[in-house]
Length: 98
Image 1 (cartoon, helix red, strand yellow):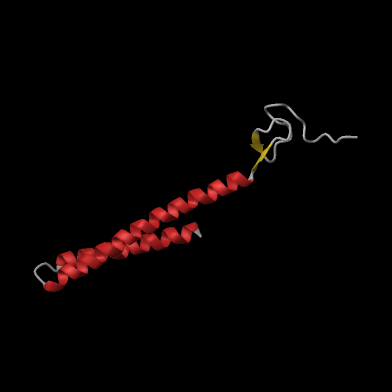
Image 2 (cartoon, helix red, strand yellow):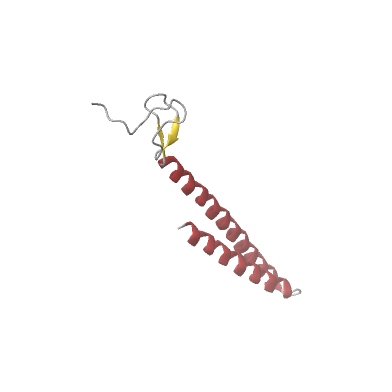
């Protein structure tokens, strides 16, 4: 999903830039200011969408990192979920109580 948001932002940015350039090339006409304004507005929103897409990526990564962390039942420190021995208190999670 993040990739799609960034692509939409890039497309909006490029189209807005082209519309803005077209409006600037029409100097001396009344419509030039309006075209430049709408092109600049689309360019601005394209940039905002790109930034949002990048931030969305960082939140997705944080959620993955959070889901791969647990607390050690012995010392309470945060450790990765796939660790078999706690690096802080050396508790072995593989041992079974008899």
